[in-house]
Length: 398
Image (tube, rainbow, N blue to C red):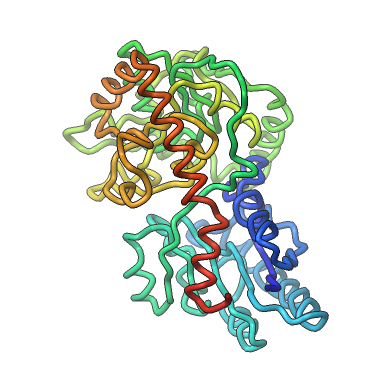
């Protein structure tokens, strides 16, 4: 099959990563498809996605027609050279006009969009989704919302690419680790674990904001990344984003607050447990260096609202696929993908998490058995290759 592929390399433009290229583009190539990739730097586009932000709205107004025109130019040329069967994108409304999707379909090309933030940011794809033939949706709770807007969703859960996410033969150095951005209820969880004696470490964007001395450690090769982030703060969009984060950190909390409601002004972590932003490879290697790898399931800051949203995440497949022992918050949907307690371990709340960490650090053989079972399950059932094969069969392209 001939596929025209369009996406940025990462869902987070604040730092360098090949996350989506590794997980979407490369598996399509591995499956033997003829993949033509959009030649366009999407980094700035993916930094300006929400029209509710006035600066982003102005950027979108200027950039979307330009990006749309270039996309159509390239896909027409590819289609003229050899017929394209599928237009596959990870796009937001900010990327392309609905009319352009219609034009692509009018060429006889099936149009499919992948999007994984619909649990709490569905408004960012509400314009374009009804114009695609199909929308791949990993959030089961949003299937009916897609249908209500006139789109055709296919429930397609996330997965991991085993050629990228794989075990490394490395010494185990850490008891409990988490790699990911510092937001939502994550800092409060880490604080809770540390206060109860857990030997926990964190790496990722934003954790320095929670350091007791304001000086969390930068990881190896992170100076240039820090400088890039600093340069972004010199732009109007960067200043506005920083100001929004600062305002959120001082928002008053609702009465009856528990561990989930702590903000940056309340949570302080010792600098030695905080690391910097890891490269994709260093992140995967860390899974093999850790006895317990943590996962958090809250979407954004929904824990501050009356409807806390949790969802299955890419990390839920990345860690076991990389051979790591994985512990994540329980949700019923996870039972569709793992044998809970035998392939991954789930917790319900901070107290349960702390207790299970203590237990599994004391039971090496049981932890190892679960780690191996999770790895084998992911290899067998949870590769992007299998997800794509399922989707292409369902939409009649194979």
